[in-house]
Length: 139
Image (cartoon, rainbow, N blue to C red; front, side, top):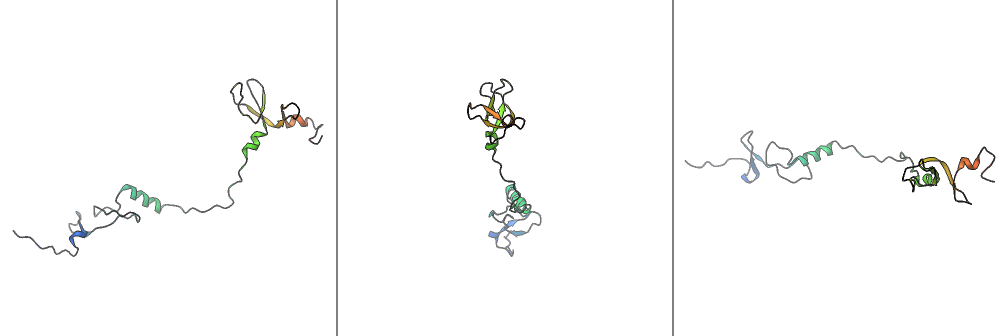
């Protein structure tokens, strides 16, 4: 029995066996453009599930557009907290800008906007300063 000469149009070093057609096919690369892996099967398109997922995400990616002027301006939360008077529900003590009672370790409720008294450093509400309209901030 003698050997038969290979009359394939493709050189043997650039061919793989295709089980579906039983003919020699040229070596193919992964469909991912950034991947340089050679495919081991004539039926496969991607070299790995990771390359398949990367190509899917690239095909279905939405263009990222810059949204100019759509974001609301950032509020400065520290100013609002610093000028708020909080009252403890456990001991009834008031604090300015502190949300948790240092004695009871309970969260306090926000009573309103206010500040510290200039004379005694006691937290006062703005409504307590104004009263029934008899006092103004300019007095």
